[in-house]
Image (cartoon, rainbow, N blue to C red; front, side, top):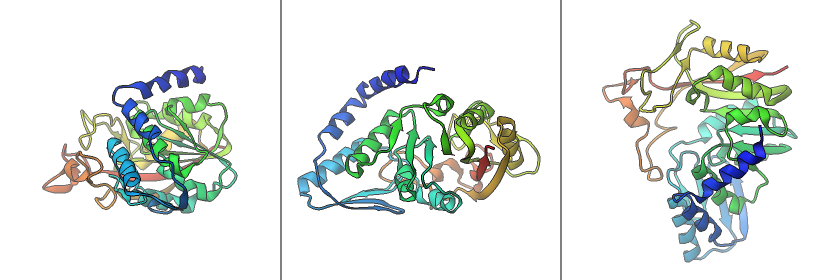
Length: 300
């Protein structure tokens, strides 16, 4: 696979009529001296000096990039209340990984929230994969001031195995259920890892001890591209068939409105609209309400 040709082709996405104005707004962002950066639950950037016009420019640019799914962020007075309080997932996983001096990839990295926070662990290299021009623009806005050396690729999970180098640790969070062939996806992740490498993954799950999965007829939680929702045993079997030697369950967690909710930064529906208004244990389609399993899979 010629990834360089693919990269050049996807750079043209930035010329799309809905994306080019965002690129122009990023290019026009004020140049400011950063006083401090805090990579905590809220990724925060404060400036040594900033005027009201410059504050407004940052706010207006961020608003152009809605919806903001991952976060939250604060750039001076601009607070981006993303749909997901992503620190809940990050803080759940953080005790289980060691990224120091490792080559790390985040598959489906969105705007880079997890990658920005991972810098505190002093990895050797951070690479994000996400074929979304919009979230790439969000990353550019943030990185305009954070000035990291994170590499953002407009590529998908299917390209990981063909990447120029392999990874010591891969994160694939909230991606697997969007893939129509989950085992092929896991194989691509497996091939992208070095020996001894680890995959951290979360996905929707259903309860039960059987080796089975739910296949929604049309939509799940109003989402059309949800294909397979496995039991934990079925997910483990997928991982083993992809080549992983061991699978450790780190946590099982029901998705709650503390974690995913409607905000002014998305202008669309969220979890509260996806559940049965008479029974929150069910989706609006009558399926079990969203619950996620978090695993660590090892390549030996």
